Amino acid sequence: MTSYEPLAHDAVVLAGGAARRLGGADKPGLRVGGRALLDRVLAACADADTTVVVADPRPTARPVRWAREEPAGAGPLAALDAGLRHTTADHVVVLSADLPFLERDTVRRLLTALRAGWADGVLLTDAGGRDQPLVAAYRAQALRRALAALARAASEGGSVRDGALTGLPLRRLTAALDLTRVPDDVASFDCDTWDDIVIARARIREHGLVLDEWISAVKDELGIDLDVDTRALLDLARDAAHGVARPAAPLTTFLVGYAAAQAEGGPEAVAEAARKAAALAQRWADETTGGTGTPDVAPDATPDTRPDV
Image (tube, rainbow, N blue to C red):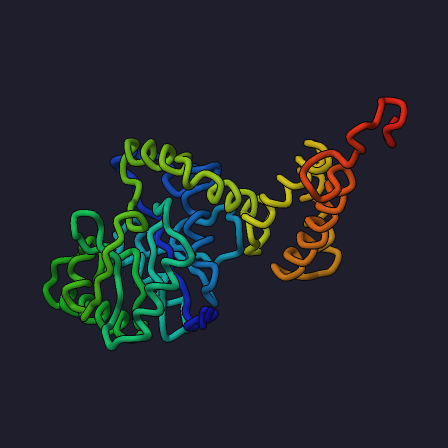
């Protein structure tokens, strides 16, 4: 199994829109699965060397750099240009702040495709085949060149009063770039309406997703950036509950985590502590079953001769 080789990059997250279809609600702060939409997106782009959020500053789950387009509310291209000015990497991930199902693996997939080809950028397309330029990875030089060209054209045309990029639609940018498109109707799902919020909140509670979503929410809340073998921990909890006593399950997994923290280790330390605890639970269970699955008591034993009486 090969490990992911990260492509050095920065991230720009656009979070300053007016959210008109949500009645002007604070869209980046709306919660899905107990986490603000903005924090969910920030978790997905946590590999970035520098993350710039274009919006008014607010508390976030991890540190970011803040920027703002001039004038505020000038539109996505103006916001992108403002954010890009704070980046230095050769590659940049550009995201909107309303993507409840965006995962770190999706961001890595975009960057891997960008590195493998010659295109200016790689973006997702949604269920209808529409481009999603705010779920994309770009070559920073190509992005800056295209934005500068659009700004010059707008200024020369005299069609913009407050700023060269004010009010220009994103399709003007995508038309100026050579792009690779990757279909993904889940990661590209964005929350523009209250119906979208309802759909997102229901989806993360589906049986196949709820555990991973919950673990991600807890790690985010506790400030933990650690990938662990969830199945191994669940197996340990089951063995402790069945072989010892039901309350042993949560206590054992807590102690495994504490032991890994004491060892100042990562996923390997958690795995080793879980292995030791699972072996102990098995030895504990074997004392009552003799390793056969049945109680370790002589068939003709009477109540007063049983070893536990």
